[in-house]
Image (cartoon, rainbow, N blue to C red; front, side, top):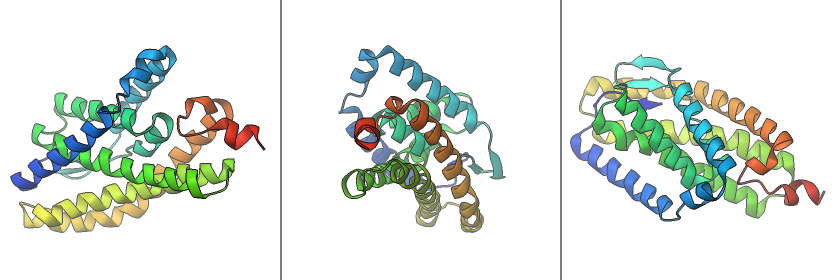
Length: 223
């Protein structure tokens, strides 16, 4: 889900853009491009994934004029490439949406916050929980990260969008629509979880080395 028209107060757009830029700056400070430059195959996978996500974002439902509902794939990108590259990919996707005229320029920061930063942070937290505290089991990783993590990150993104409307909606009717939109979250969460979990299942079976957050030696070879 993402905003497609300006319905937030200007000060909130600025704050959201600053927060998104700050988190993106921290991610870029880890220099994720070094891994891309060192691995040609990773470059191809990352670029292909970015283009695929951009294309999938075109399949969206226009619930109201200012809000679009679509799958984000943020959890999948974080699991496959880790958060820094995932956020860089989502920045490119959001920029492409602006350049093509699907989204207004002032919404770049808030959309990056809702579709990228917040769900990515939630997904990282879930992955860290699995990595440190849960058993080294392939199915645990798949179901908790791939399914539950994707659903939780979608919930966080949706609630953040509604929360932003509660903080600074410039239109009372749009605020009412945002509260009504929250009812769609139970429909979006299973869809995101199913697709993310299904794709993760395929990758973990055939190409576990492609999933940067997955240690195949720890989860498979030692069993």
